[in-house]
Image (cartoon, rainbow, N blue to C red; front, side):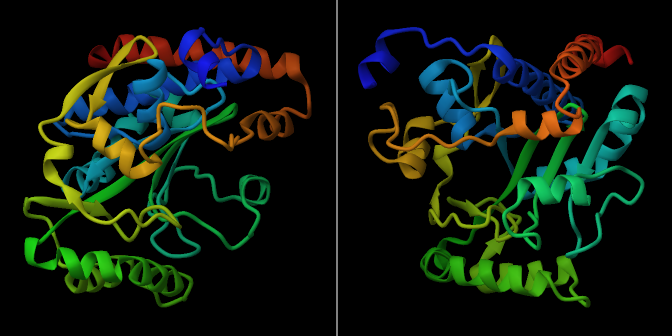
Length: 302
């Protein structure tokens, strides 16, 4: 399988490819908004791995992930509602999700993905909800995850590495309480871990990020200066040292075929949305793709 992966062109077809192409347009929307507001991001996790290993999506993947440092992440949260609402098609067809507590979306006037239909399909545990920013095209359903990362004070790196996972679980527990205050609790935990908005030599994942990961602090030079990388024929932002980050996330053999292949199964969910009518779903994808390409190609004019 490693030989096939490295020596042949694995071509994704059918609905999976349609979702991938549509996902790229959503990434382009984020990229255009970040350019307009002078914000940085980098491709990460499987998206970065796909860019390095395949120049695009991992053939069986349909998910998109980016990282933003906290200041830019917070700024994106501020500007994103206006950017989505100023374009009628995005306003009427996209959802913004960032839960400020277990049951309330920060973006009060926009659709979001934690409705019973989405929640019951995507999550094995009904009470499991992510705490980071998500932008989604709702029907057909395609989304992008935006993960917040933080600078860590140099004299707190050991403390961060030792206590990060327990503090993340603690934050998740608090998050489910009715009197939870997102910013207050996040600031308390950040102080314990030595997390700061000021630039330092070390970076780590925010506690309001993914559910299980605990990769520890890493050098700022692995991200900065930010470079560009080709992904599905477009130029997007990439970390300075993708090799070291991919080793951190996937091990030394990240260029080889993995032992397990995971699917997000957006196909199953989209069929549910369209009452198993594949023709109607196909038409919706083509129409959505046309609209998003136009928006991205004329973003500065709209």
